[in-house]
Length: 140
Image (tube, rainbow, N blue to C red; front, top):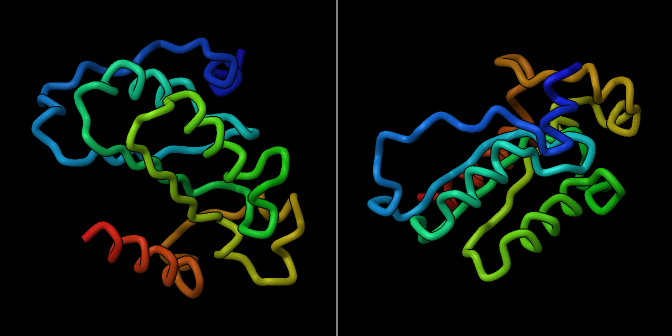
């Protein structure tokens, strides 16, 4: 069976043990995918296990949805709402950098083109780079 399917269903092999004390950090940034509208199991388990040790969480995803479709069934905003519902009262912020920003505008609504899109040195430009730089400035 495909490991991605197992992770989506909440079956996982767990996270590696952390050597550092997370309570010594002001913020922990988790970067991971959104799969079919799901906050993946390893990230969910990591936050669950360490939620009392961290003052501020940030979840960043380079997802397949777009800003236009962010509230669709599989959109990143729907996943962010699930994250906030899973961890009420937790100081967690969610940010999306949709892969569609690397694509020509005329292809951004094409699901097959989106599935073939890759973030590379060549595509890391334009709107994607602009949003990334704005995000990095927020972190500073």
